[in-house]
Length: 319
Image (cartoon, rainbow, N blue to C red; front, side, top):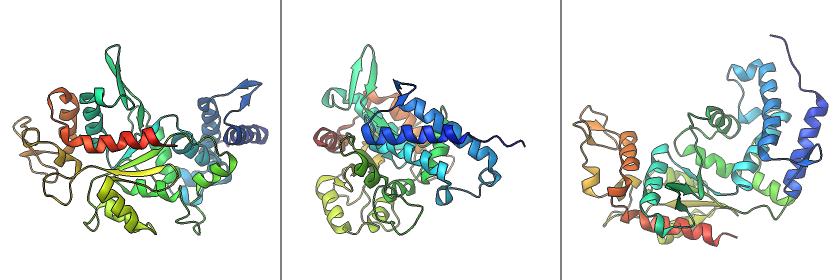
């Protein structure tokens, strides 16, 4: 395979544009103000040639732990775009089904949350951004999140990785850069929207995502108390944890527990819903969440309101 190198001058200009963006909030291309899409196009082009010329990446032996200098520049930009200078509040959930439930609930209750969603010209417009960690329309985005940050297509481990790149938790490990701190030092004024990680309310079960996440925090007891009281806690300047409310006298609850018995007992193609069982007589979370999103008008979302109220408060009061 013939090696094609990125001209060094092109790389230097691109890096300078990015630094100007991080410092001033804007940058120029040939004297005209550039866009994030244009800058990402340049960085993506550089990265693609780097990958093409480096067979170790293609063989899967390289990842976020051993990035090259130019790859680190792209990693830096991705963090800036999605988690620092995001123009809408960014929502990350444990899995794709959780975001479907939340979208359905907001559609049903849209009149109560005008800061989160609006209905205009016959369609819903979300004012928050649900970050897709697995996107069939843009599979490269999912690959980038995995490659640069170890944020995989599902599961809660990726949420912990975002915390590592937003704090000094692992500052002694060279491949973790506290990008939140880095960008704040360059420009104190760009931080405009929060990033909110949503977990099932499973504080006390060992091995469950929320319990495991808090184990890594030095002030975990304070965060646990915050969640018990308010369903949410602020982890860093713009990084929050949010969870769903409890139902009845239960001490823990998954988001599926917020639906009433009528909804959870819905029979689809002769099968009933189970979040855990895999037998032929059951359907799982994927089909259930699709049903919820399709039938949002008829479903009772009252148990979602405490979580949505808190989500709304975080966004409205963020400074």
